[in-house]
Length: 78
Image 1 (cartoon, one colour):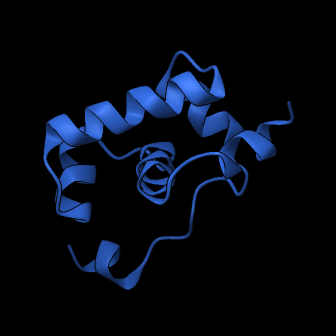
Image 2: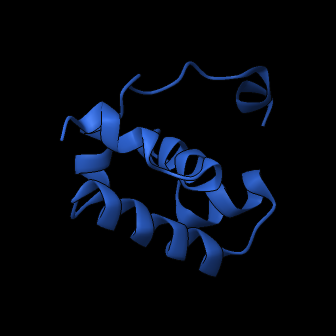
């Protein structure tokens, strides 16, 4: 299975978590950004790893289809 096809299998929330983790955010930062609990982030990330056959955040960052996103205005202000 192509990796990009794997990313399309993720739920919207899994994809959001994966994207932010791929950008280098911690679980706590992802939780705050998405307004969910840290335990929820960990659970979503575990599902992402399972669905994509990954073992680490580094693998996720290297395989993210669009690479790291450009910083937003919010990122530069905070």
